[in-house]
Image (cartoon, rainbow, N blue to C red):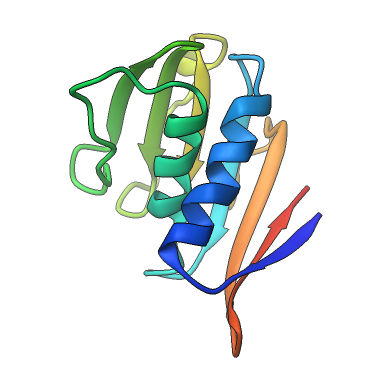
Length: 126
């Protein structure tokens, strides 16, 4: 599936719809340049999964891993931008695992790439 998002609001809505469709144990791999909207998409996924009140999705660029409770279980958000060697195996099956900068990850159930286009951002979901 391919869709063009022309705003952060639209990117969040795309993520929200995806989050609603998840079972709760998927591995989602995100690819895209800096500022492409990967964390914005994760905000929508969290909303769609029913992010519990009082929690806010933030980029895990410096913390590497952020976890959020949702109505569908845990959302585990990993950012590998600054990391070359990180073992994600312990997180698989512990909830929905979303990995930013997942260029060499082979266990993806869903791969999403986000790229800049003249109309906004092209989001490809495979």
